[in-house]
Length: 109
Image (cartoon, rainbow, N blue to C red; front, side):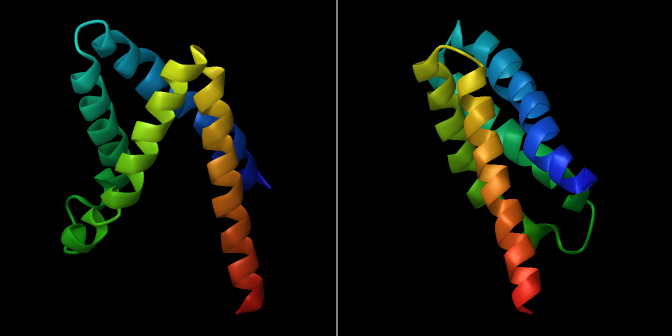
């Protein structure tokens, strides 16, 4: 279905190009540590911005705890693989597993 295609195929290509390829890649030329920090915070903010102006923003801000480590791992994967395709593949796998868990959880309910 369209949600599966979007989350597993399209989102990893777009997000990894933006956050690891463009943002992390350009900042890393000046400071590797700053590149990790800025790209991780930007990645988390990107996924959480819809909740920033709601009454639930504090609760939903806890979700940053899942995006920040994932972003650091994806940036490391980008550096280690020396290619944008390494984090795109890992990101797609993470989204595939999350998508499968949601589908299986819904079927069990």
